[in-house]
Image 1: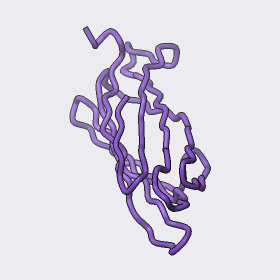
Image 2: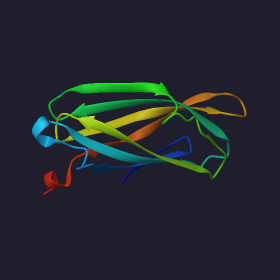
Image 3: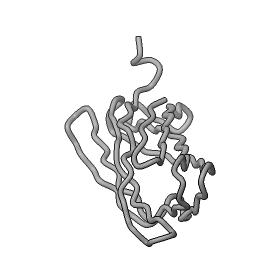
Length: 128
């Protein structure tokens, strides 16, 4: 699990390989990742947007941007957390992801970015 804290918002990411969704012979490797967002600040915040960078081992790069996370824009009071799971298909068996969430402080409507730590995507058979 990879973890990074920005402005009191702690982001932890745990990736895992989905062998039943993957078809290696067709260059389809599917990974899921569980993200935990913990508000360790003294302010109530809301997640507005996400921006992901996806890099495959063959050099292919993609970016994914959009509102919220899996259709939600969670509001987190101090000491609250939110967890969600999403997925990412790759054409190679190894890759990595990182990104940022755009947040807003409810008290003064100030927007700020929170970094999502870089994490590797690799099936267990590549870990040896």
